[in-house]
Image (tube, rainbow, N blue to C red; front, top):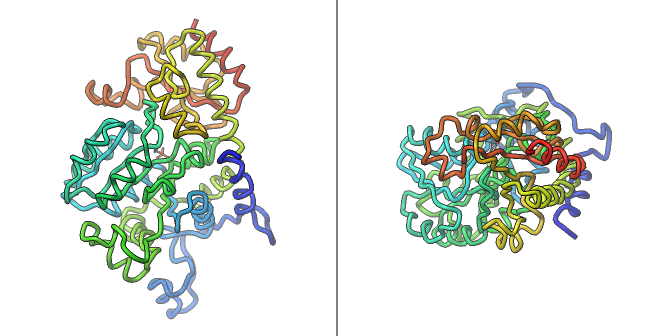
Length: 411
Ligand code: PLP
């Protein structure tokens, strides 16, 4: 049984209700009436479990959070307005001025910009390391290091991190590991591999059809005995551990990020995302097979394809050993020049040109002129952005139709 089979049962059983309306209810209210002041006080001090205000949580969003936490074996989750919201929530709930992040491997442009530009304005430094530079991680860790961060698959450089080895380093040094698992939900299980937090842009394959912007951070439980969160490195968390025990990372994220920054999910987006979750396992199963078929056929046709399933990829050995359920929907085509890339994009009839990934339909985008247009040459080189690079996100179409269209477009 591959990873996806178990989720086919889990998702449909947990999203729908067994009584009353089968489809999850959309609670489209910003605020909630408390009835009496005693209840209001209880809600605010967390002794009464009722909704407080939609910035801090909403019943539809809570349902989504419980399914997401179950998917990753977390103690809980916090859904957000976008994937960037989830990354900001997970990082900013742990960071203070003077802290450091170690970012390993390929990185989505928005996250790179958050770490490299925005967080530096708040006194937070990020060290960017190559995906295989495990010794570099050990060397860079010091008493200010709060977070090690990696993407399960570098977007768009297709580099694959050895998450278990990175987690072992993080755990022996007592540092938190956050994995952006947007591209490989279910295929990779970050918390099982030793990470502390998994973050997602649910905008991508989880909702899966461009209907909802959203994000989610899934947190592990604090251990009853020793736990790195109980050390001086994470002293700001201790009051939450004293009050909430193993759940502490959830109120910490809600109080230190959601309440103050307000990157809260909307009930409508949470509902659309729940609908996406029902079919996520089926879609992933199909698309990870399609992407290999398409990558192989285009490679054989002589196009410059980057996908870890190809023997030509320097990531192939890691792919075969560590990514047995595939590595998501992406591949890249390097057309060598911007002109050739534009020609391809103007000729393809099948691909939709957009900045999204993980959609039901195949998507394509020239990287250097769009997401990375304000990155300098050195940053582009580090992130693997060449002049002719096109990122493709394979959809649910018949793979042969995609191959035929792409070969015609490349001629
Ligand atoms: N993480 C990854 C790997 C992404 O590809 C993206 C968006 O492309 C994000 C995070 C940000 O997600 P959102 O657009 O939902 O903010």
